[in-house]
Amino acid sequence: MGEYSVSEGKLGFLAMASTRMACSGDTTEGLMLDAMKNTADLVIEGDRMTLLNEQGDRLARLGAVYLN
Image (cartoon, rainbow, N blue to C red; front, top):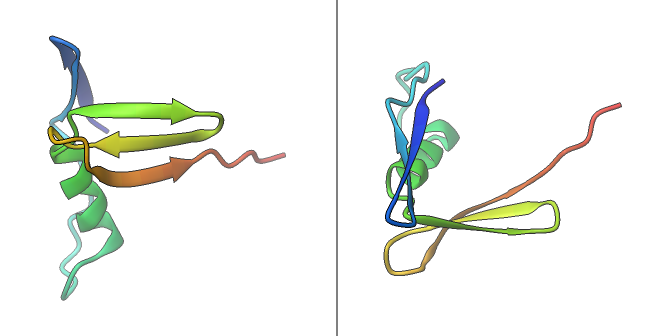
């Protein structure tokens, strides 16, 4: 759950909700939330979406999964 905004061509994720389970070290959930928090832009190519920071560095690459 959460919201997103687009302002002056920049993408931002806001008020993201998660379980925030207490796990030691970097978790997939924590890494993804960090990527979303630092996202300024995205690129969609085919069934893949890449999240980028202000400098254009890749934060995450996501792929669509089609379920039958």
